[in-house]
Image 1 (tube, helix red, strand yellow):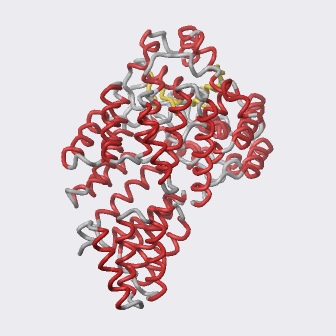
Image 2: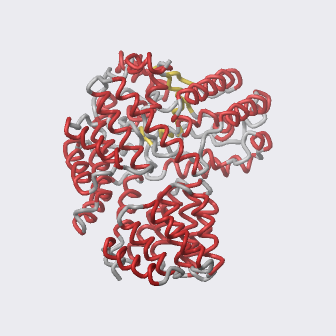
Image 3: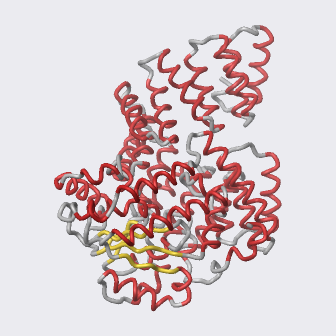
Length: 558
């Protein structure tokens, strides 16, 4: 009862007394694990949880609780094993399946994740947590409309389900409905002012709407209520809003923080603050520590970087997708000129180019929708065996996702940077599409990637050597594409764009067949949703500070 009331210290005392009286009681050890978790003592909680399942291998609740602890620690394989054991203990209980859906999503097994969530719902149609988990899976698959529907259902089933309400707000934001998203986040904090995650989400929406001062205020509210919320600190650092006292607070938090995603973000925030005041050595040390933690977490969840695999994949693409094979597919795709593929290394100016285009009255940006990757799972081999009807079906499926909510635009940008690896598929599906290849100084690009805590994966960005390997792979592949593609490709230099914004913007619009519009020079006022690490940058006029950013770090980078 004390645990249910959130009174962890008192619950611990009661549980330890019972453990002394009945050392073989699995229930006592399980309650102790919950009490310790409530106090943030995860390692001790896990020890108690393991004792509970050891004492009673058929204790459903203990397996689920221990699985939750492993999940929080980032050990997704252990969490998966425990949830699967719980499902064996009680196959009619929806909770293990819903939790498995969450783990599989984090591991990138999206089909399995969706199947688990839907199975949980089939066992208990009013299981709000499963609908919320399904929404997160659908969002990861790029189906934001379906995700919003699932989040709405979760809220309908449990009106006070604040996490689902926050997810609904985030989904509305990703659909580009900033007003509805802001309203939904404000409804969350109105119900519970101390909901730090909702304040951070509200800050992101306000930032996307160009309300930067209000965004900073929201991020401040977030860390006021949860001082360890790394996402809010990262945004405050990116805004240049951190004070000397904030840096001291961050350093203190990191002394006592446990490993986790939020802790990695704290390191990046501290690094950005040090970089902002010109202390390159301190900044690099914090970036290095944040990346080392990110790498451990990604590898523990099965999302580590496979450099050999990348090189083999590029070799396979070059050896498989040639001019002759593409020529056979010339009449297979859709003649639409709507899709514009902005590709290149992350942090090379892809978001900036997208925002310039989306500021045009006849342009729109879809962000990093990452739909191409799932259209043809056996790419590149399956590309040459693509039947015309299949190509048209894939093109139609892609277009429906790209243009959803943007039906009136003549050009819609997909700025998934690593569509660079799938340009052969782009030509097969959209032979009249246009490609913009973004380029930036290699050192600046590499360091900017190293200094970014990417929201989704990108394990290669945690190590400078791996970053260089990805850059080399991308360069090698672009040399090949220039030799075999018929698609028009425009190279846009970040440095040239910064030095001559109007001239380069005109060149981009000419390439797209759009008339000049001065609104493209004021892209930072467009208010479109920006969902990447560049969100602060595109809310300001074009600036030159990022050119030569790596120079101060060159002795440290090597």
